[in-house]
Image 1 (cartoon, rainbow, N blue to C red):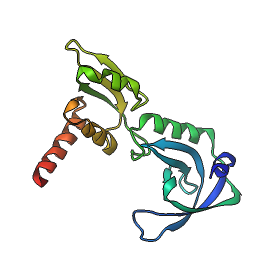
Image 2 (image 1 turned 45 degrees about the horizontal axis):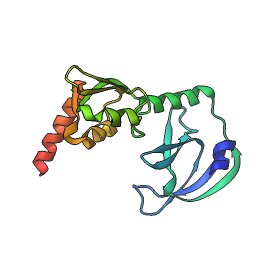
Image 3 (image 1 turned 180 degrees about the vertical axis):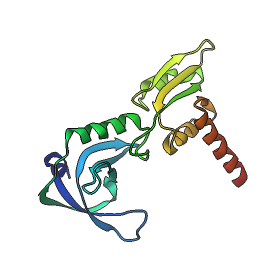
Length: 179
């Protein structure tokens, strides 16, 4: 796996997917290895679609065969991948994320927690006049951001954007209807 990554060699893998009962075979072109939520992923480029990149979760690879065939990836594409990673909140974001100004208020005692860990490349914290911690970042309003905010339970209060508040409100109504 590492040889393929370092040498820009293609890999033929057998891969477990959600859509299939049996693992499927595919050939991948891995360009980067990332750690996301304690899981390792390859970022792979699509040879058929110049603007399409995808993720392969390493623990789902059943078998791998290093092929003699190599591939090339241009600097422009590597910059696009880096840009996507820096703007996205998670790996399930769109290929071209559309960041918005996110502002979330936390109780004062969250300052250390929020400053110890990087949740997003653009995150900044400040303390407001009431002593609460205001976290700001430029990130897309997507499924992973919504799950992250929900994970803070009643400790996080979204100040903006309206789109994030609206999605959380709709999700809250849906949860009330279920429970």
